[in-house]
Figure 1 (cartoon, rainbow, N blue to C red):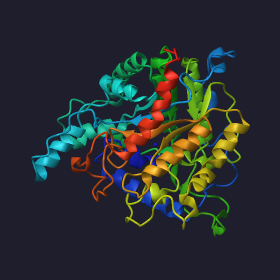
Figure 2 (spheres, rainbow, N blue to C red):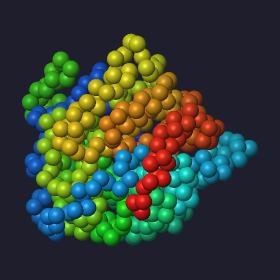
Figure 3 (spheres, rainbow, N blue to C red):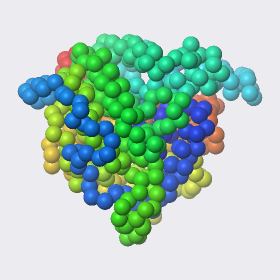
Length: 473
């Protein structure tokens, strides 16, 4: 999940950092994003971004690949394709016994917070998801929020307190190995996904910070860290489907050099907005190269930029590599899916006879550049994230309609998400929670008997039917 849209998702994926600077950045960035989305604006800066362009920053040619020109494994579809799965984080799953709700006040909230900072996803959780029909899971490899929570939210009592980034990576990889073992055992494909760069929380920077994109050394460190993951997991089998890093490339304060047109309105040159970092094409190329230095077995998921928006595919030129899957994130329109998050709660519903964006045809229009591009280029289309917050009226139908659209295009998809922040979690009811960003309040927790879960399980049953003849593991 960039840090404007995904901030709420990492940010809210069950391990909210207590870093005040991060929270302030997220508030500013999301307010701006929702304001732009409210008007139905499609954002681009200058000419379409080419995957072969090299912006100022890291030099991709400094990362030499180990050549493997044949790569026959990429002539077959990704294992278990199409993926119909779940982006998962945290530990608040419906099959885990919820906390007793007899305590009240501060003691009750302390107990809930302690519960939610406990175990991460476990092998048992993977088995439960597989039993529901989930055939893929997007697993976070993020380290920054893990260290931030350990150092701040647990008041220095966590065993992770004072770990270096290198030490934390060892802990994270050991945990990921147990999850990948469980995926192999249960016939589930895992996508290793991570956006939190730079990893060190003490830098006070996120992946949307202009300071991050303006310092080539930090981008080079990102490439190095991703290379460590690829080296460690390169010998994994088909339980590892793909790597997906920096899933929502975005910079806060991008400045277009020329006046640009937003839905018939001119935005002057020099206006501070959000945009695709000019360094992104070069950084993405370097990421592909470092992964291929160690791993020719597994797919790499890429995206043009601008926060993973499907509209960013207009005019996109793909990098010249094999074994790629093309991704978009679908939260459009944001004023519906993010209603009440950092902004006042507004009245709207899906579908709406008054708002063409809030119809199935409107959703198809948002996705059109993505699916037209992947179809024209014979590419695998993957919606790495999609959701609507639980209190937006008609959010369940929004999710159901998107699944129908994705399946019509044979696209893989991951719903965001179970076990983490309550706003996206299908295990909670549809009542608006004013302090939802601060607390996963179990007052709103229902379990697996919710309309959202029923829609998802219905979709996952297609995987169960296909699995009878699938022997990929």
